[in-house]
Amino acid sequence: MNFLKGTKIYSILTGSCPVCHEESMYKESNPYKLSQTLKMHERCSHCNTKYKIEPSFFYGAMYVSYPVGIAFAVAAFVISNLFFKLNLVTTFIIIVGTMIVFLPVIMRISRNIWINFFKHYKKEKKLS
Ligand SMILES: [Zn+2]
Image (tube, rainbow, N blue to C red; front, side, top):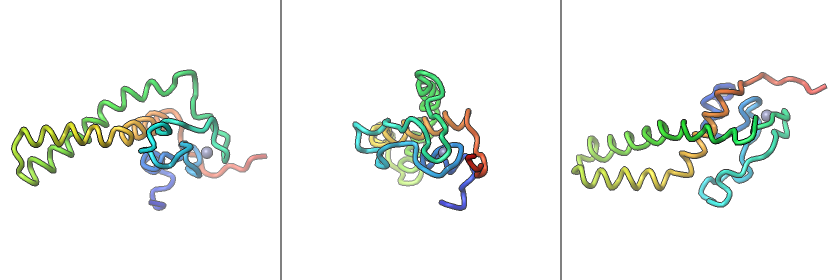
């Protein structure tokens, strides 16, 4: 994963600070601790970036979660219907199951993509 450092992909996949990529934005690394899924630090302790740029900033992530959810659904469809040749009803059930099982991941990825629209990677700046 480290070879991706400095790219938005790295921040999006790891949930790391979008500016310095040095630490996670989330308090809990496991998204499946459901009470903790969306708990985030106020600021990056490394570069002091404020994650919640403005009040209810992350509501915008809902717009992102739609295409992200579709991406997961398409992946589930391709794997079960085209790859394993399951019928459409089974495929549909698998798609719904996939959406539910991956919901915490989808929510986090959506937030990561959303914040990466607004914050950009900066190579190590020395805090003076
Ligand atoms: Zn940072």
